[in-house]
Amino acid sequence: MPMDNSRSNLLYLWPRRTLFVGRLRHPIEFSQAAASLVIGVEGPVQLVLPGSDVVWHEHSLLLAPGQSARIDPQGQLVAACYLDALGQDFRLLSHSMARHQDGVYAGFHGEHSLQRWLTALYNAPMQAEEAFDALESGINPAAHPYPETDPRVARVVERIQSEIGRNVSVEELANSVNLSVSRLVELFRAQVGVPVRRYRQWHRLFVTFTGVERGASLTDAAIAAGFADSAHFSHTFRMTLGMTPSDIVTMLSGSIFVGRGAPAGGLAGHNAGAGLPTPACQTGH
Image (cartoon, rainbow, N blue to C red; front, side, top):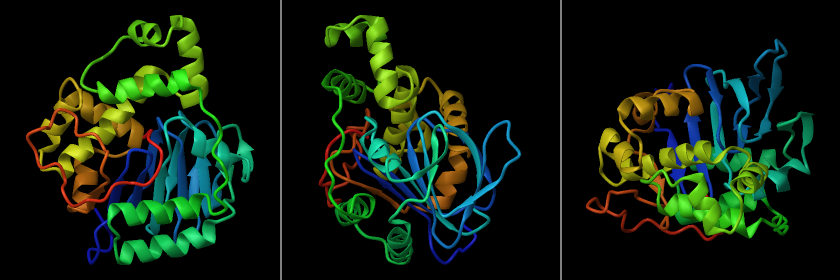
């Protein structure tokens, strides 16, 4: 539901990150399953946390995985970049931003450069590879090395992604990396920020929209991504993103860009997105 009908909102899907750029008509309440960097492109956004009546007005916000919030962009252009699953982006960015409280940071040092680039992107969308490279430069302009990750957790994330249509048990995942269930649960939560089940649901949302871009209906794409039915998909979508699936499909009006390497779930028969460039970065949505 763009307020400015002359341009469509944008959604970029890469294996490492997801980027939404557009206008929202109403405030959204959500409990996110991935860390996000939120940028008010034309001015500050309003943030309210559960159980608080304090309203923050910030041009840039970094929210941890699992953080619940209410954000009101007040009709302006806003960007939400969902960061990598293994927490490398979040740990890098959090060290250079002011902490409001656990899980909420503000004042990204490169916000002005990102605002200019996001405005240009909205006015003249780039193809996926070019946009990813520009976003990488905006998030990490000094090309600092990303924090180390636990290779066992990385392998579990890769397994979840590669078998997204299956509910691979935590026991099976733990056995595959020679860990006890309790130890995997602890390490996964520390690295990814949410439990295994929550991360799997988040990645299924990502896979669903790659399927939509490749020609599937929303329901078919959701089922192929592993959701039990459309009701399960809609509930997860609203809880995680604060909108209904139909809301965001209407807002995007076909402006979805998918980088090569993005999974298609069980949609092997659909167009694989030929001609869309591949992201030049590490794996791990």
